Length: 212
Image 1 (cartoon, rainbow, N blue to C red):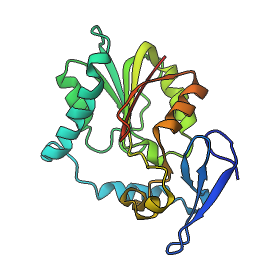
Image 2: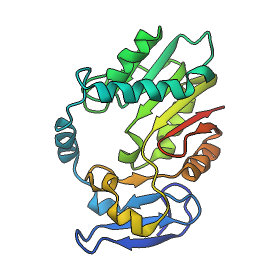
Image 3: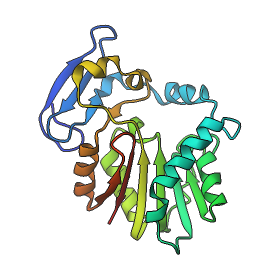
Image 4: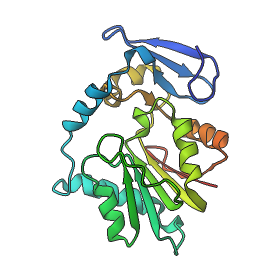
């Protein structure tokens, strides 16, 4: 099998309990669930409906504040607009960015499917807890670049795996049935290079910031 991202040969990982099959790439370190095990769009949306993330959840809000704080000093001081890609049913992050004086467009394939970003370019594109759901992150990242102003930032949040197979089987993050692709910082370095982007900074846990 070939890696979905860099097309290098992959190694098969089998879950003896669920019978799910993953593929791990020795080059970009991506771990992907084979397509035949990916849940339907209906099942995916039903999983999202179980989430209860809003401004009433202080921990949820603080997570986003810390996310923005991580790269805010790198944002152009004259930045005016942002796109929150994969905003979910309650666009909490978008509102926090509005509170920081940015105009924010939102997109979500289920909850805000109108492509407001068409014919626009942004100073900042955020995508939090989205990339683990994507079958083709390369196309998504190239889309981001198309709509990013020169020198703008792409800030992504997902949870990185530690490149240890034994730990992967015990990892709570993979147990979400809608999580189908897992990354390390190296994975994003490879995808960014393929898209003509570069990594500006990474916290080695869950945040990566790209630019060009």
